[in-house]
Length: 113
Length: 114
Image 1 (cartoon, helix red, strand yellow):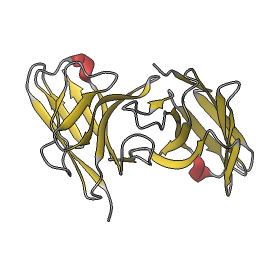
Image 2: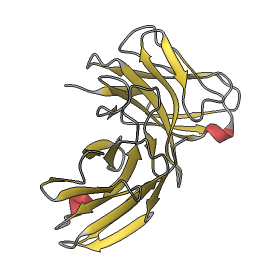
Image 3: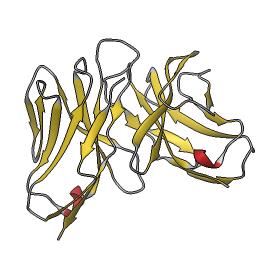
């Protein structure tokens, strides 16, 4: 089954404790992206990757890191999480950059206390 | 950069009635407008999209209209059913091969009352 998977689905952590949210897709998509969803703000892009070893900032990259060492994986790293990073996070992929249908993962609910 | 405004933020309709969600965009270069549906506990899923070379597109009970002059586009759902209850997001993008990505609206919570 074609899908985007994220782990963990739920995470509660404390301020400053490094964490990684994994994302994997099995559709051989070149383009992958991370979004955060907050009430009243919709989906805002954090980082995106056009292919292996090619990443760039989205609209809200502060406090986040990403890497794309393999085509299928695109982990999101919070080196020193803060309470304002409490949010619902989505990973997405699409065949090529930009305007093709984006396939979203099921989401990761992160709470930073 | 692009700015997408979406209204209303919440919408309740009786089963069988129509629902309309409206979005405006700011960048006249945007030429791709998808709509995503997010069911509870799931990620958004594309339900319909339209490119700027057409004014309307339909898929069964769902239709999207685009007014490039006014820079607004709308989602129309007819004969609503309880399973249409979800959060709907509009988005805009430029399909020119640039690195600019989708800009999403703030979402509309649609509730279809039985």
